[in-house]
Length: 251
Image (cartoon, rainbow, N blue to C red; front, side):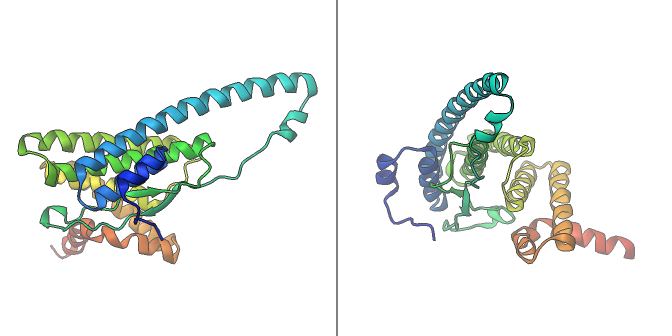
């Protein structure tokens, strides 16, 4: 169970790690405080980027030192290098408590909560966490466009959300060791389709929803019972495609 009883501002003061900043942001976002959430996610992403830069530099130095050791001692250094077990940083999708409306139909609303005990000394774990933070920031801009900003700024907020969703998805797909869930990738594709539909671009929206439908059909055929349950929140988004395929032969 995710403990949300500590006041967000107090918790952020006690610990300003990027995982904590992200998790405070999820509390604000799940409560409908989009502007506050954006602020925490931006701070979290900055901290994560700094951590990645430091970790990359450290691993580069370790690689150079390891290379020198191998030159002197053959392959012995490979046997003595410690290998940490992977630690998945994503702990849960946070339940969304903000009142819903017709404008959120088909939107996957839950932000991602990061484990604060994950092994963030690993570069790949911090990359995965950064992807989750980008997703949360995208969702915050998405919801800010619907509820928290003036009509004149709506398109800008939606465009920011698109860029962040796409960046999160692309970074995730480029990482060989990425270990985020199918639910995450489905959430990104679903929410991109939701934005394109809001912007009146049905072609791009349907491209996203066809991708979502293909994933759901794959899970239905080859996935576990748990993975099939993951697909349930996205049924609303692809119902029109199922109906098209059902009606077409009769026509």
